[in-house]
Image (cartoon, rainbow, N blue to C red; front, top):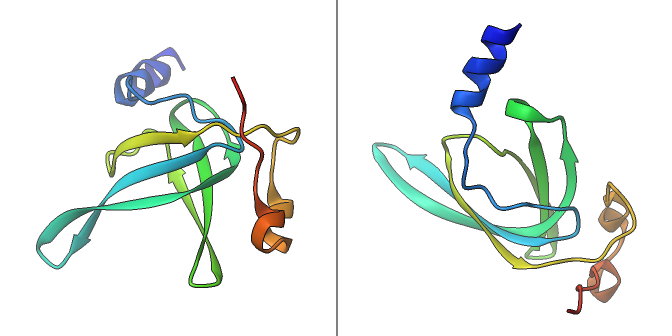
Length: 114
């Protein structure tokens, strides 16, 4: 079991920002189209985090052209170039699945004022 933890710790990224529930983030993802590779930016609100360690994932939701789009990103994936924190959100839930039913300003998350 210690050997598995050792291998997993080598694959974990060190420079990932602390992504919390309710934050608005920009995720820069490598996309392969044919033989070309480019970076695509996916910006949205973090509505869930799951698991832990090497298999940790977070779900980002945004509304594009009136349709809700959710993507699940593994935090330590080599396909993720970087994660930018746009704004911190203030929430009282660990999962924000209720945002799926809301439209417009009702689907906004309050910002932490410092």
